[in-house]
Length: 274
Image (cartoon, rainbow, N blue to C red; front, side, top):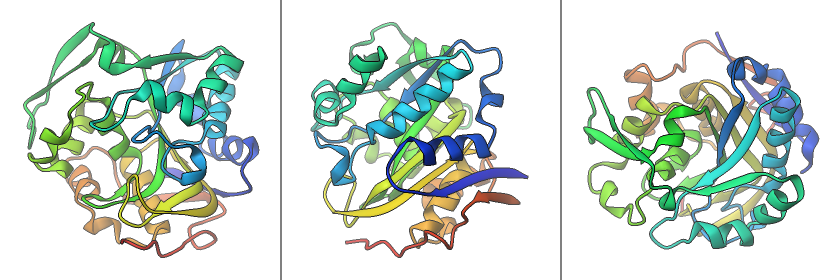
């Protein structure tokens, strides 16, 4: 049985700490000295809009990592319409990096890359990504958001941004749900922390209405964590393409999930799709 923490609380460090401690986050970092935190910088907007990862969530993750002797680095790549370096500043994450001396990498400019084969890939046969991603555990510091194409953008969808290509639109034509699961089959998040302090509903993932949810969701199984997050948003997770495909491909499991903390019903809300 896999644990997923659902914690309700006002925006501060403590709800994130509680969620991490409830799932015994330290286990996945045994023997590791470094970890990468993949944030969501799909747009040059701050956390109040619900579109980008809240710096306070990352601060809590950083503090808990350093508590167990793991040094964090924040990573993201440029998107078609977004410069990740500018988003770092606009989101408030640059101030955090400076204050806590946290490393930052824009993956687009990391040219030390490796070709990673994708066995039984449904849309991709391989991906070319920075070597650092394959050498270190990666955390998905995701958002609780709707998405016009994939219905939701949570822990797994966040990993689409690991592709260092600036123009990612070409991957959408291959079947975005298949692309997401192909990526997550070879680069699996060791920890997923979904920021729902301020979520986003509507067309997403950039434009929509901010929703004050005061919620943190955390887990170590990408399928289980996204499954519970989608339920919280009022979706049927089994009807969301990449969650269903990931379950079918054995990339995690939505069977026998042990929800710890405050539970789904305490925070559940029907998110608007448009």
